[in-house]
Structure formats: C-alpha cells, structure tokens
Length: 389
Image (cartoon, rainbow, N blue to C red; front, side, top):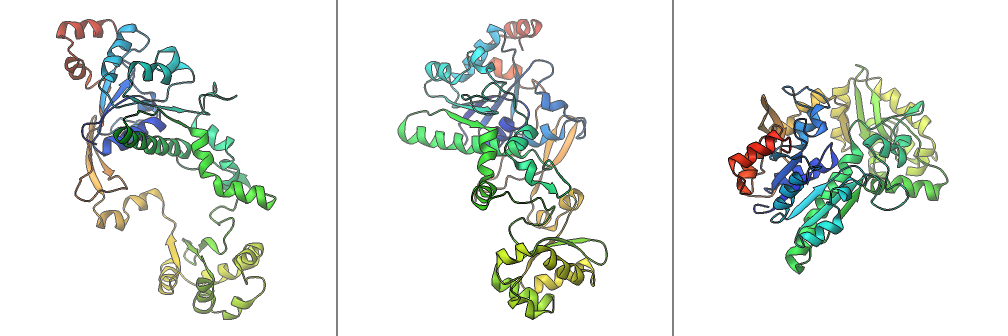
C-alpha cells in the first residue's frame, strides 16, 4: 500500500487496530492526537518501558501529529492533510465528528476522492446512535458474556473482542473501498459499529438459540454443541484439551484411547447430538481415562491416533511457543524508551516483507508534517505556543 495515505483521528482500540493493519501493508498512517496527552490509550497501563501494552500493540509504523481540533487552526491543518489523503478514519464520541465538521457528508463534499471510515458503538443512526460504547458493554449487549464462563457465572472474554472485530471490519471495508475507487473512480464511505461487528460473530449461537429453543450453555472449556470437546485434567494436574469432530474420530477414540470400542455403538453416544445430550456420562468416562496418565503421555497417545489436542497454555507459554520460534514470527520494534518483540502480521504476502516500524511518541512527527504542509518555523512555533499542536 505504498503511496496510500491514511489520516486517523483515533483513540482506544478499534480504529488504531484497523489503521495499524493498513500501516503493516505499507500505507502512510498519520495519527492525530490531542496536544500534550495524546490518545488516552497511552495511559491504560505502563508495563512496556513506561508505555501502555495496548498502545504498543496497535500503534506501530505510524506518525503522530498533535492537533487541537476544537481550534479552527487545528481543523484547517487537518483539512490540509485530507486534501491529498486517501482514507480518513475516526472513532470519536457520538456526534463529535459532525460538530467538528468531520462528518461523512461534509468530508465527501470537501474531499470527493477521500474514503471516510466511521467506527461507532451502535451505528450512526437508530435509537442508540448517541450512546457511548466500550468493549465490555458491547460484549454484554450482544449476549457474548452470557455464553462465556462456567455454569456458576458469566465472564468477560480475556481480550477486547468487540474492538478487534470492529477494527477488522473497518480494515477490510477500507481495503474494499480502495479497490472500488481504483476500479470505478468512486469513493464510498465505510461505516462499522462495534455492536454490529460482534453481532456478526454471534451468528452461530444466534441460530442455535432461535431454532433450538434455548441458548448454548456456559461450560468453561467444554464446547456447547460438540462432545467430547474440552479440557480434562491429567494425573499430573495439567490440563489437556482435545476435540472429536466426526464419527471416524469417535470410533478411534473409543477403540484406541479409551479402550472401550463398545461405546461406539452405545445409543447414548451414537451421534454428535447424543453425545452432547449425555455429556456428563461421557465426561466421566474420559475423566477416568485421563486420571491414569500424565499430560505428555496423553498428548502423545491422542496425536498418535489422529485426535486434535493441545495443552492449555498460559500467556508465558504462548510467548515461548515453538511454532512462533521455528517460523521466525518475532521482530524487534522500537517504542519510546526501549524496544519490544512484536509478532509479524498473520497474513503474509510472498516476497513482500511486513512493515514493522516504531511506535511513535506523542506528537513526534508534528513539526515534520507541518513543514511538509508548508508551515514556516515561525508559524509552527506560534501554533505550539497557543496549544494548537
């Protein structure tokens, strides 16, 4: 995406995640931040050389420009950037973009080639258009929290899944809009909401609930609609997760792992739905087998008969995963105050190395960008003195 310029008035997770992926592909991403404090996600924590782990994750390879967009001079600078930009991304609070003259209608009028991308909580129309939305609120509203956890209680997913979903759809939407502009000459605005992005990911439990008369139960690591599929405790106290996906695997499990081939024809376990209906009896059989061997032995036996399985890693074990090391997935990235090891983007294009640039300090590129726009040193000094940049 060399030659594509993205300007983003972004904060928190969803929009920065979308634009970081565009930066990974080589786009120039200019991140507009508040003078002084910058994106409030910079202060979520201080674990990475004094930087927020969230911010380091989703803001590499960007340029940071500070602007006070409530000041007309700040907005004039922004529009100067947008004249030659390809994409504008924003996830401001409800109504804020329109108040600043940065709504989709105004932008398409002033900059016909620009692709505006709006990321909101619940959409820019409808009864909840004015509501703020954060990740966990959306997890609750889509029903995800009610599916996550144990029979004793629900739980938040361990990552910001609504933000990530919205960022992914914004990223793919922008790519689609760029392709459409290249082939038709028309710039189509993109709109994504956290709620609708996560709603799409809720498709399977939605169908199950509507047509099955009730929603899937919360079962911890057990799969709600497939059995056996979950984690079981080995004799050494470690947990091993395995999954049976079809009747061939079920027969192999019964004969070669459980040592009970007669279970293949047991009417309680004859089909996938039967095994789910009799999950407790099936789990008792599996648990008894697991209690007779250590985790490594169980993993070896399951792998030997072609059953998908894995140990249940913590994050530290994930960081040391042999697949990441063997496939050379880590790269060093500079951050303010140090360096970090960052994972390469999941989608690799053969022959095109991923861009893995530094994470910027607040306003690090302000002077260079303003100079590029034709501002003199005196003008830049005056803007800085007035708190505009």
